[in-house]
Length: 374
Ligand SMILES: Cc1cc2nc3c(=O)[nH]c(=O)nc-3n(C[C@H](O)[C@H](O)[C@H](O)COP(=O)(O)OP(=O)(O)OC[C@H]3O[C@@H](n4cnc5c(N)ncnc54)[C@H](O)[C@@H]3O)c2cc1C
Image 1 (cartoon, rainbow, N blue to C red):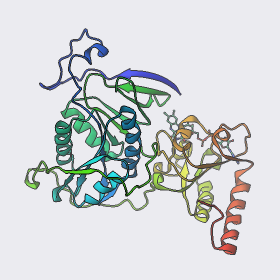
Image 2 (cartoon, helix red, strand yellow):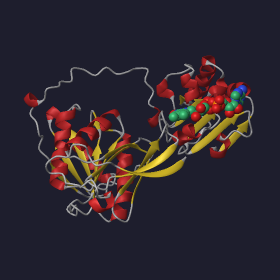
Image 3 (cartoon, rainbow, N blue to C red):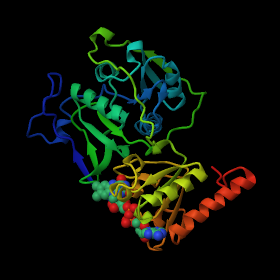
Image 4 (cartoon, helix red, strand yellow):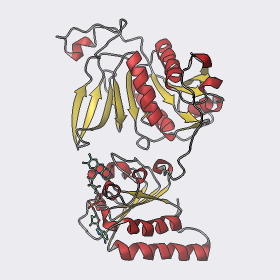
C-alpha cells in the first residue's frame, strides 16, 4: 500500500465565525490567518450503551495519550449518558487527565441532536485542538454532525494517527478502493477531527491510582425539545462481533463452499472461538458479512487467529495482522499469509482441520481444558 498526503479542502459553507480564507492562499499560508493558539489538548468522545463503553473508546484514549504526550498537552474524555459517572472514573484510569461528564436521563440512549449539542458546548468552551471518536455507526453519525456545525474538517475511518512538529494531526486511512493509505491534514480549522476504527489502537491497562478532575456539563436539551424518540432496541441475535473475540478461526476460498464453514464451526466450537472469513468467502455467499475480516470488514486483535485456506491478500491482512498469535493453514507454501503468520502449516485443510478438532476434543476429554494458553 503506498502513502500519499492530502489536505482537506476549504469548507464549502463556513459559518460567520469561521476564518475567511482567500482562494489564492495556499493552505499553509492560510493556517496563519487565524490564530488558533487558544486551542489546546486532545478530546476523546467516549461511546457507551447501557453504561458499557465501546472498546474503541478506550483504544482511542490509549492512542490519545501517546499523541498528547508527544504534543506535551492534556488528554480529556467526554462521557455522555445516564448513570455513567463510573465511566468517567474509568476514563481517568484509562489515560485521561480530566473528564467532561454530561449525565442526564434524556441522554440514556444515543440521539444525534442532544448528543451533538453537548459535544459542541464542550468543544466551544474548552477548545481542544484535536477531537477523536470511534468509527462506529454512532461515532460516524455524531462526528459528522459536530464537524458540520463547528465547522471543521473530519477524516473518517482512520487506521493510523500521528502529529507533526506543527501540531497538525496526520490522519491516515485507506483510499482509492483501499489501494493507498492517504494521510489527510486539516490545516485551516480547529479542532482537527477524526474517527478511527476499532481494533487498530491499544487501550492502556486500567490504572486505578490515576487521578483527574471530572467536570460536570449540563445537558443542552430538555426531553420536550428532542423530536426523536427511541421506542425499543431489537438485538440482532445472530450477529457476530469479531472485534471482541479472543479466538477467531477464519476461513477463505480454500474451504470450497458453505459446508467447509460447518467444519470450521466445529473447530471454532472445540477451541471456544468464533468463525471469521475472507471477503472471497463472504462474496461467494458461504457466510455472512459480519464474519468478514479486513479492510471492508472487521479489524481484529484476537489472542489467537487461524487463517485457513486464506491466501493473505493485503486487504485481509490489515484486518488481522495485530492478532497476538497467527496460525496459517494453506497448501501453497508460497502463500503470502505465511509472511505474517507466527506458525504456518503447509497442507490440505480438509485433512488438517478435522484432525486438529479431534485432537482438541481429545485433550479436553482428558484434561478438561483447551490446550491453548491465552
Ligand atoms: C477494495 C477491496 C476491499 C477488500 N476488502 C477485503 C476484506 O475486507 N477482507 C478480505 O479478506 N478481502 C478483501 N478484499 C479481497 C482480497 O483482495 C482478496 O481477494 C481476498 O482476501 C481473497 O480471499 P481468500 O484468501 O479467501 O481467497 P484466495 O486468494 O483465492 O485464496 C485461497 C487460498 O486457499 C488456499 N487453498 C485452497 N484449497 C486449499 C486446501 N484444500 N487446503 C489448504 N489451502 C487451500 C489456496 O492456496 C489459497 O492461498 C478486498 C479487495 C478489494 C479490491
